[in-house]
Amino acid sequence: MTSQDFREFKWKKRILLLIDTKNDLNTRNLQLSKFNARYNEMKERDLVLFVYNGKEVLDRDGMLTNINPDNLTYGEFQGIILIGKDGGVKFRKKYLVEANEVFDLIDQMPMRRAEMKNR
Image 1 (spheres, rainbow, N blue to C red):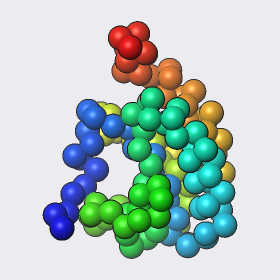
Image 2 (tube, rainbow, N blue to C red):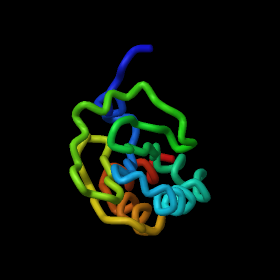
Image 3 (tube, rainbow, N blue to C red):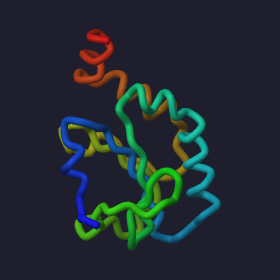
């Protein structure tokens, strides 16, 4: 399996990274459910979700990805990070975060506004 990193998503996808280095499965699953229930809205915003558990990067279904976690160092932070299509961190907040808070932020971004106008 070839290793990849988040740079391969640049200019293609927005990334929502759930950081759970303490392996708090209850909180992680509650946070995941808030976004998984809104999958179509995530897809519409070109938003993909990953979980970093301190060792590995998992997809939204909890399956191991081939994304190399070597550059992910978040210490004790437990929460979500939104990475824009330009590769920059756009939002960082401790758990629990409502999906609307992230969607509203994305919808205010110039690139997203252009996407909505062109669709």
